Each structure stands twice: as structure tokens, then as C-alpha cells.
Length: 394
Image (cartoon, rainbow, N blue to C red; front, top):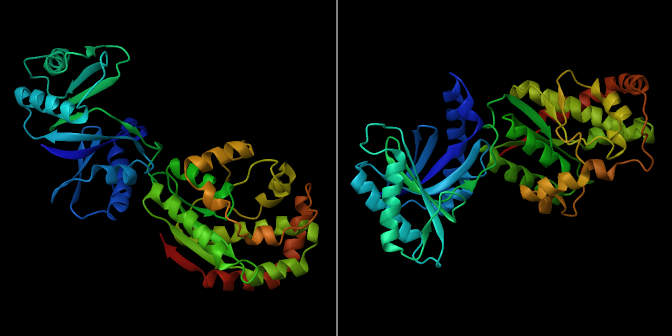
């Protein structure tokens, strides 16, 4: 008998012949997250499950839970014990031992149920009969509790697969698909609330995202950069790692500030950021650019503004927050623990250079005309910035 963590996944289970590819990507993401713990952790494929335990010593299940439950693709995790011996007399005794260890004392009238699943149908008893037998054994030692088939206070699970597994709790994971299973993209990551949430939602759908951040010293401080790095670190826990590309953006931004009408600066600035995001995607194999736009939230996110920036790139622009209001976005930011990082009082380049009265109904043709006029002098600055990107592996 040994302690372990049982890992359950959702959408992957309904995949067809290429299911093993999704499983392998999920294992790779989990592996990156648990490598920071003690060496010796082994990830074993089971039937519709993964099992993680330490082959070199005691398994720190609580530490594993925190590292594994946040990985995209994980539906839930269950602390469990494993028995290599599947003889029913052995397993029923282990089930009782486990129950007594987890629930040393229970209030009068507590209800419980034993749920048994068996892949091997050659046992002399059915799953229902096995559950009833284990339940009767538990009642001998807990005469003050009661069996209940519906809505029990405690559900003890016993699964016979390649080994026998016993557990009584499933801790909810984030679900979704493993990052990378749907391809790659680039996330425009600012220090605000929205873009980290957008990245989380797209990666949950299996898109592996490199993040790009536009840094404009001395107008933006090192604290602003550190804030974005902390956001990227937080997002990396869900995906099993992340690359953050920090662009030296000062010269590009000052050129735009000097050569673009103030009311049109925000739109042109966004177009340039999208272009640089696309350039990074071309280098990294990305197939889309992801932004934190929410329709109507600010001047650059009106329908006219969205239309005016759309032609900046040829790649798809994914906007997972399009239909969300601010409170809905904040709720998700709290859920994924990025909100408190995002509200640190260090401004990014967009906030500092924003116009007092940005245009809300720009004409795409006029924006494109201005961009075409300034691009001969702007492009060398963009190329220089892209050549001097700092890359952080988080």
C-alpha cells in the first residue's frame, strides 16, 4: 500500500484514436509543475486516469494537489492509496484501514456509501455486492453511522483497475484541454486585469501562448515589468510553463506620439502592438494573436475601433472576453489569483500615453492611410525592438 494522487481528466476522455496525444501533453504539463517538488515522482497512465506517487520515498500528496489541480485538462484530483494486490479480502481490509485513518471519529447519524468500480469482471462478486460487503465491515466499526445510497455525507470509492485504488474525496481542477493541444498563439499581456484572464481562457481551450509585453522605460518602471512577470508566472502554473517576451518599446511609442494625431494614437498604438505580436507568432509557430478586448469597455474597444485595428494583421485575433462585462472579468481574475497582482499601482505604456479624448468612431480607411504614411520610418524602429526582445522562461 502507498499514498498517491489520482488525476482525472474530462474532455480528453472523449477523444478518438489521437487521445494518447492529449494524454501525453497533459502529462508533460503536469511534469513541469511537479518537477519543482522532490525528485522521484512517477506519473503512471491508468484506464481514464493518471496516478502520481513518489517511487523513492513518502508521497507528499498535499504538495502535489496544489501543483496538479491548476493544470489545464485536469478535471479533478483525489488523494488515494494504491494496492498492487487486488485480492478482495486484502482490499476490503485496506478500505477499512483507510476509512479509519481519514475519519477517526464521526458524529451520530453520519451517512456513507461505498462505490465500487471494477475493470476486471471475473471477480466472484458484482460491484454492488463488493460495495455492500465493505460497507458492512465499516458499520461493524462505526455502529453510530448509517449507510445511504442517495446524497451520503461520505462516499468511499474503491476502484479495481491495473491496481486497486481507494479514495473518498475529489478536489475540482480547472478542466479544459492541455495547453498546446489546440496549437500555439501569442498573448498581448499588459499589467491590467483583462489580458491575463483572456490568456487563461484561451489556454484552457488548449492554445499554448507565448506572452509579449511592451516595456517603455523610463516612462514605465521596473516595478511595472515585475508585475507583468508575476502575472506570467501565475499563468504558467496552469500551462506547465510560459515564455514572456519583453519588447523595448520606448522609441516606437515616442515616434507614434510625435507623428500621430492625439485622438488616433490609441488605435495606431494597438495596431503596432498587434503587428509585433504577429511577428513574434511567425517566429514561434503561433497561429493567432490573443487580446483582452471586451466590446464597449473603453474607447479602443468600440465596434468601430475593433474594425479599425482588424486589418493590422493577417492572423486571427482572438478576443475571449468580447461578451463579458468588467465584473465578470474581475470575478475570473479573483478565481485564478491574478487580480491582486493586476491592481498593483504600476502603470503600463498604454495607460501612460493614452489620449485625453481618444476617438471612439475611427474610420478604418483613415487609420490605414496614416499608418501607411508613417510606416517607412516606423518599421526600422519596430524591427530594432523585435531584435532586442528579452525572453524569460517562466
